[in-house]
Image (cartoon, rainbow, N blue to C red):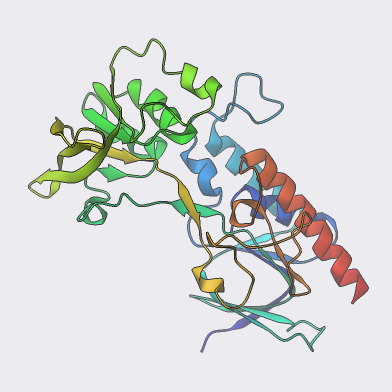
Length: 314
């Protein structure tokens, strides 16, 4: 039987929002446990150069920010547990340590308050068989896997800021980079779009979608494209396919417990409070007009302060 660990606040997710919440909760004198299935840092770990985080004129590597946030949270006393939250139960009549119980894969955790900061995950490439090739040429993290494709041909699928950032990074290590976008112009911000100017090993494929991922001996060997305007098909030979077509929130495990919008994001107010007293949301997992590292950190701080105020009133 799993042990039950007691704490003032359980924070689910150790991305920038969760780590910031841990810092502010611990500084408020509260015991805080942060649950993280993978390494602390969340999507920060996939950012080669974080260009728009205030205070760093030349940008900063996402790994560095993640490491610093984790070290800071732990210095103030927050505890990071390697565990995946799979459920949560609420006892609204209990104002003590067991008001909430978060069920993890390894343990269960009772708390007086919970902050959900599970962020968002990459939208998978909607092509049959692509999932089976993850780690065999298909990747959702250019900074994690790009070096495996040094001097090889790669494809980036997408047209937003993340896709452009992937192209810029991969152009420095790969022999050639093919950018595939289903529209005739990028969705990326003008600043990001300008980063593509002058990249000599970039080939663009507008108005195209990937209709098939080709493979040889169990590894990616290229893709088949379909032009959405003409219906014509073409083939690109490449060893890597990097997918950056958006993200979706990690909230399936919360269905029926908290209010979600039509896209699955948690409905919360500006302080992160939900309809269930003592339950808060922070970062990319909640409804918000802007999803950036700087707003995630702010969300984490606000949610922790709101949770501290809630606990003080109990």
